[in-house]
Length: 293
Image (tube, rainbow, N blue to C red; front, top):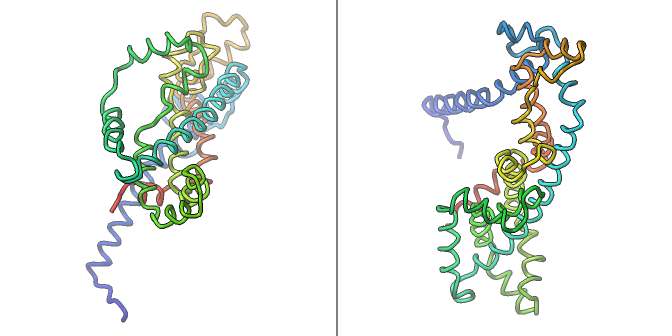
């Protein structure tokens, strides 16, 4: 039977596409504008001549940013943070979500731990107690101060719990009858079928660790130890410290808006490179892991 498409249905579909296109443009056009500003001359930027295309193209702001050794040092710190943070987050999310996804018959204390997890998501001790804990553990000015305070992302735990609940119990029971231990069941059965949720959680973790600049301000006392977001956020040009006439001339040609646009563009490049590899899992991971029927 062929379903008849009415005029009202076509209008609704057109309105939906219109809304989607407008939302897409609202996200894409500002980024295109930032790229155009970062590639434009200071005069064009100052006179608001830059739209979606560069005006009087120049790479002066990129040269200033990329020729800074501290920039690359901060970049490497951010890479270390993302790698360590991702490994730690995934370990704790998986090992917490797996037992919490079991029934009360198999895990009698499940409800107690679920309430603790929910409470931890809704309430926190605040910045000062957290800083005191990190300080007492001698983690100030170390990479561990950037990854351990956020070792257990509670939202991701709940997402994985709901996803693990959707795995057929018969698979778990069959493996147990064959003599598989709970760890073997987790590794051999649950993880292979949970790729969408794992990719989604991994993407959340990567984005958080790469974009977070406040932790660097809070736990790092030296600018040389700043991760990239903190370094970019703090990056300023002190003209009074410039003694070379040629360098002063170059700095004078740089617009603050162009330099800020360059920071934004450079900081988004790694995420733009990573997202395409995880995008195909993202939507399905969110939908399946967020709702439990």
